[in-house]
Structures are given as structure tokens and as C-alpha cells.
Image 1: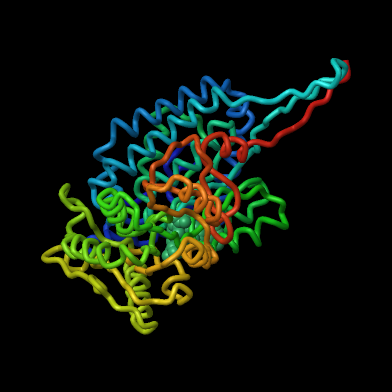
Image 2: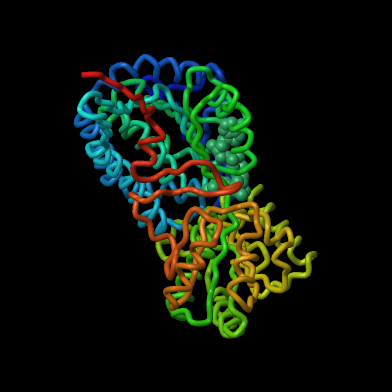
Length: 480
Ligand code: TXE
């Protein structure tokens, strides 16, 4: 059985304790590899290596840092099929999705920041031709990047790329549930010629390896994507140590459908925004609000299409719906479906585990599920389920739907479907979310700010925002 290794000081090494954790293939429900159960000793070694590498890397010309990162992006492109197959096996997502979304996006993340750093500029402020101030944007030092399991290589590279481009050295930990592509990335980083210690990838549990990163005195900033409860814990730990923090947390996103929408485009996009990656994207629209005059037409068409969606073997290129990420997560999703029924909801389609045949019999599959008849304030409509489960709620007026949409503690993304331009702008302005998609979903321009409000997070990633996060502005004032 394959044993994943840590990448510390430019080398692939075993955890110092010699301890490993099981890594599951969710499509079959079996252990297929082993992950280092790293602890403080491994993190200390990674931080020490990063600290040693920092003077060299931060003083490497940005053009050279950019060239090394571009080589890494080329290697991701050249290994597309291998990485996509690994991502699918580790996460349960359809290989077609990994091949067209996750891995190409990981390549773009690295390429985007390898080139963005060449255009990252400072301001100068001149006082009456007598005094010049200029802003020096300095890399921070050793930074921690911690990422989740839903879009493993995609979100991992989204953090480490701006950190490295800005001249920081990184200690990164992917989710212990989906470590494989981060491990393969460490092999590619060696091949790309990244100097030793610049990027360190340490595997292990959140409460042990992750905890050692966030509490380490020499880790001066933490970029985290994951659950809101973990984000709150990290904030509690980091705030008294005055670490810089970027937190991308959960969502419970509204998908608001007005009666005047382009019905066909809305319907096909809503299928994706509900169930892409088995609903395990923090941007999925899990609360669907439909204007009452369109409710029955939408419901009939949506249920008909969802009932025909086939859950299947993630490694089959034809599969659109694969497995959810783990047994625990499957049980959590199923418990929410049960809760929805206890709260008075009616399951229109799905609502159960799916048992596939043969080798896939033990896999973690859930039928795409639509529920109606719930109050917008109930737990099912307020808490993040993070699976292939959506609720339908009718509304009459714009004011009413805004109240419903803004009623959760989250505020990551929202989708609005209407042909009325004025209404689209008005609704966008009143929605409490960091991202609003109008007549589209998950259309991403990497230059735009990405992040949430309320309990969906603090700070923005994307574009130059991430380079600002990974640098400290120092003002230098000169009197002439
Ligand atoms: O996330 P965790 P989990 C939501 C989703 C899901 C829930 C929990 O609702 O059901 O969060 O998922 C590391 N110090 N999202 O348990 O625990 C951990 O090892 C440092 C939304 O997987 O937050 C992993 O690398 N690190 C989300 C990362 O944090 C710690 C995507 C995320 O794990 C740590 C995933 C600690 N004390 C889940 N504890 C999104 N917004 O996209 C854990 N970690």
C-alpha cells in the first residue's frame, strides 16, 4: 500500500514518529493508502526549514520566482490525467470534473500568481515636492496554509501560489481526508526546482499537525479554508499572537429565481449549482427560492431532471455524480435529510443512500435530494449540510425573498435569476454575501476579490488581494 510522505526542506520524508493514518477511497469505502500522522516535531522541522529558506527566496528576483512557479504550472498541465485520476480516487468526485475543473484550475492558480507578481506595484505619496513617501510591500516570512477536502488541489494551490509569489516560505497542510494530490504536487515541486524549504507540505490531522502550525510562534500568518467552527478556533488561537489571518469558511447560499428569468438557462445552471461535486462546494446554492407564479413549473421540471441524474463510479468518464467524501460525511448528510423530514419537509426525490454493485458496494453514495415544505428559519435551512441536498421555498415579493436569503449566519455567495436589470442590481446591493452571481454561477475571474461576510469568513482571496494579504506594507518617508 502506498505511503504518502511529508515534503520538508526539499525532501520527501517519513513522519518522525513513524505513525500513519488510513486514507480511504470513498468510491469503494476501503483504505488504499497511508498518510503521515505528523505532529509538532514534523511541523517544527518544516518551520525551521522555511525560516532558513526565507532570506534566499525573498531576495530571489521576482522574475526568477515567477519562472520556477511557471515550471510547476507546466508540470501540473503535463500530469493532468494522473492528477485527475488521483483526485477522483481520493475524494470520490467524478474524474471528468477533476480533469476539467480541479486540476486545470490548480495550474491556473499557480500561473496566475506567477504572473501577477510581475505587475504588483507600490504607491508613492509626494508632499509638495518636499517629502516623498513610498510603500514597500515586504513578504511576511513563514506562513501557514491549511486547506479542506472538497476541492483539494484547487484550494491548496489557491493559497500557496500567492504566498510563494510574494516571497514567503510556506508550511502547508492539506486535508487529511484528501492528501494525495498535495503529495504529488510535492514531487512536482522538486522536479520544478523549487529551492529546499521554500514550500513544505506536512500531512496529518487538524487537531495535531494543523494545531502545531497555527500555534507555532514563527508562523506569522495563516490562510485557512474549511469549516466555520475550525475557523473560529483558529481565530481564537491566532488573535492573541497577532498573526495575520485569512479565513474562508462555510456557506448556506441562496439561489433566488424570479418568474421573469431565462427558464432554460436557469434550470440547467441550477442543476450544476445544486449538485456539482455532490453539492460539496462552499459556493453551491443549497436554498432555492422560487417566485410563487413559477414555483410549480420549476418544481416539476427540476424534479424530473434530478430524478434522472445517475450516481455512478467516479472513475468512469461518463459519471456526473460520484461519491461523497467520507463515511462520516455521508452520515452527517443523511442525518440532515432525516432532520428535514422531522421538521416537516417533504422529500420530492432522492433522500437516501445509493448502493452500487460489485467493488463499489461499500462506497459512500447519496441520491441527489430535493426537499420542499420547510420554514426558511428551520435548522435544515440555516445550517450548512455540504452535500447533494437542496430545499425549495416559494416567495412572493423581492422584500420577502431578501429577508429569507439574509436570514442565515452565513454570507458567502448568492445567485439571482431575473431579466430585469434594475431589479438585479437592487437585489445584489441588498444581499449579504461576498459574491453575487446574476444569471450565472461559479463564473470565476481570478482577478476578482473572493470571500464571505458574517460567519463565512474574514478577508479576501483572489487577484491582488491575496498578494496584499501575504505582504506587509511599510511606509518609507524621505524629506528631500
Ligand atoms: O473541515 P475542517 P471538515 C464545512 C462543511 C463540513 C465542515 C467540516 O460543512 O461538513 O466544514 O469539514 C484542518 N488547527 N466545510 O471537518 O475540520 C483540517 O485538518 C489547524 C466547508 O473537513 O474545518 C483540514 O486541513 N487546522 C469548506 C482543514 O482544517 C485544523 C470545505 C479543514 O478541516 C484544525 C470543507 C486545527 N485545530 C468543509 N482542525 C469550505 N468552506 O469550502 C482542523 N484543521
